[in-house]
Length: 247
Picture 1 (spheres, one colour):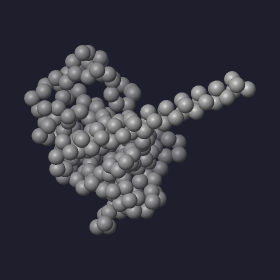
Picture 2: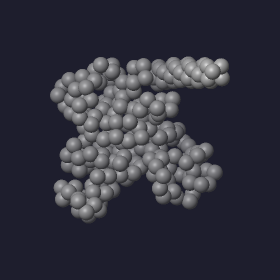
Picture 3: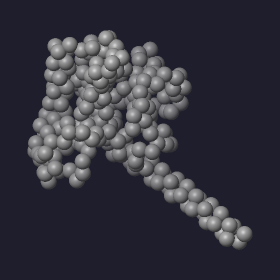
Picture 4: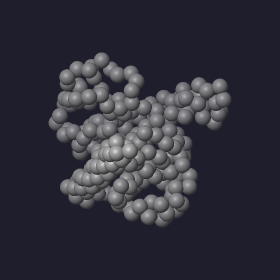
């Protein structure tokens, strides 16, 4: 009986200590993100409250997709235009991906880069508000086309695929050479390419992006980044190489 009581007390203490550790870490993470937002200076995008985000999505009524980063919901801004609201998972690290995305996309302005319209950072809630892409990601067009139950509306001809490839290349060229700072995406894949009403591609998902000075011709990385799959042999070298190796 005494042993059972001791074990129960130890379990409660461990649970309490874990809660305190989590709570302290959450507080530190919030301070880190707030410090980043202050040091970054005035942003070109608006900061929304969580209540505004909830109203914008009608209490997160229509989910567009879900991934390791969190979930994306369809919403409507005050002017009536449609938006896509990405709610970041509360379990995703210390806010690094959130800060990367705000810092990287707010620096860009290009027809082949998705537009960040605003963000929310309130307590443990983190959200990013983007322009709405009615045709979703390139992924569904590629993988649905190989499915036995494929939808013919998702079929892309070779000419369309060629134009999409060129648009993606132009977007990457802009990130590497056209911005005030050089931005390496590190996670280019069909899921990260969104298509507008005219099937024009826009690069999205900048959570793993790295911002460099334009005079840096070589970028070193300590570990692999991005989605597992084909990795060019040169990535395994100590020096990553020139900007043309982004993926």
